[in-house]
Each structure stands twice: as structure tokens, then as C-alpha cells.
Length: 143
Image (cartoon, rainbow, N blue to C red; front, side, top):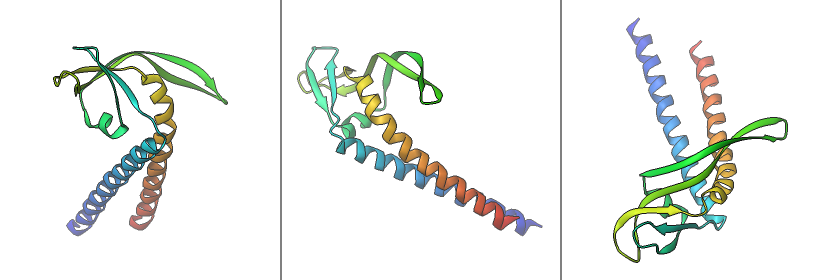
């Protein structure tokens, strides 16, 4: 009886490991495709006012973020889509002009969202489909 429980727990652990690997791969693919699109994030230092550009990799490194947005519902095809419209987005970076780690405002947040969202949905959606297929295969094996 305990052998069956051990097999199930190992299968669940294997699924979690595969899920993490799939989503890390999807994140890396998304970042590479966003960089290939030529997107540059325009930033403005809130301390000194200096404007500079960042690549998607540099922009993704900073974890701290603050934003103000409103959600707009619009018709896209046959579906109603809720999409945030950003009024203000800032992340903490070291400013190249004043060399101070401070909040820097993202000046093209809505344009970046329009470039990144389709790429991210495609990559993470594919990872989710693969994960569901693995789940169905695992369920068939264990049943």
C-alpha cells in the first residue's frame, strides 16, 4: 500500500519539476523573442530627470515595481478582453547619469505591453498545453 503512495508522490514531484522547467524555458524564449523584436524600454530617472533606454533583459532584472493603471474592456474578435492601461510604471534601477539607485519611470509601458503580451501568451500558452498533455498521459498511466 505504501509503495503505491510513494509512486504517486514521485509522479507529482516529477510533474512539478517538469512544470518549472517548462515555464523557465517559456520565460527565456519570451525574453529572447522580445529582444529580437527590437523593443527598448525608455526610462526617466525620478531623481535627476535623465532619460535612458534599457534592453528587455536589463528591464527584467529589476524586481521592484510600482504602477498605477486602469482596466479597459474592449472587444477583440468574439471575446471581451480586459487590458490594463498604465498611467505610471516605475522600477528601481541605477541611473547612468547620477549613479544612484532610484525609481525610474517607464515612459513607454503601454507600447511595451502591446509588444510583450502576444509573445508571452504564445510561449506560456504552449508550455501550459504541454503540461496539460503530460498530466493526461500521467493520469492514463496511473489509472
